[in-house]
Image (cartoon, rainbow, N blue to C red; front, side):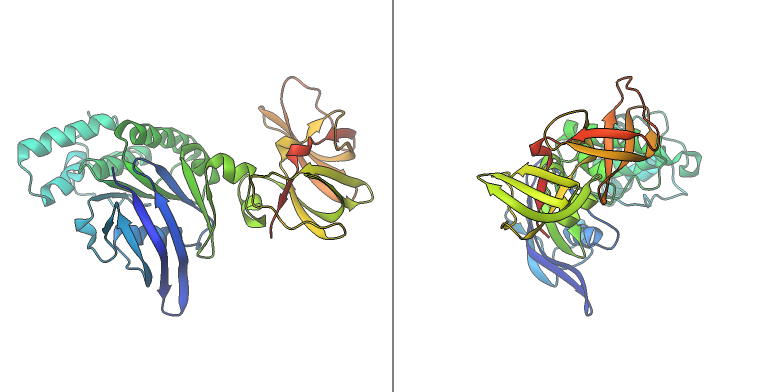
Length: 356
């Protein structure tokens, strides 16, 4: 297991910025995810770690070794591409064995390692199958086995599940995490899918337009977003803007409009926005942080839309000039209808003040 450190790495493509001043320290055995919308620089950063791109500025280290300009085949990395990049004319066995044959290992060693890798990904009975005889999920597992069979120091995965349907994506996501935990390999994963990032990662780096927005655990990213972009990109959130009307210790009261006032607690461990009475502030309230009934930050509204998912009842509720998303866990509750009045409340810790 190796650590991966990027020391203020930037990449320019001519005059176009790819990524700017990326500084991360991935720990040995960590599952670290690059998350962000298309074009934010995730894959560019991954390709610099792999050695397919060289940084315009900054350095890349594996442990304490500078690999900034080292060729990809000398980095001992395993990589799974978005399109799998399998050889269609080869069998499953031959595809998995390819990297070992390039290393000129003996046939007996190759056979032993490939069969072990096939068992790891539950393809031990598929060795003689051609790639076009496999399902998408099976092809993805072949690509994963090919990356793992060389016993890499670092495993890189570039949106490996994007071509799978929803059920296969969930199954394969669990499989990748199981293998990563079992093998303990340092893993860097690229995705635009927040569910993948939240469920698989030890830590997440959120990117936008080539710039790192926040690095933290899934809980930190979700519960303590660093700015407006992170709060709106990760999960669903009610983004509101209002005027600070009172500050008392860590308690802050905000008036959104004449019908909507909320009071929240400033988290001492978060990056606090500068708050002053009379000044504007943005705040985030997650749909699941709003409860039906009586309590602090009492709200009264009218239901505009009802969505029943089985697990939850989702409402769009008009409160004053704001429309709030509300998620009520389904416990056999009575489901209200469009046009019904509803009483809601938000615990003070459910109100999160954010930076721009």
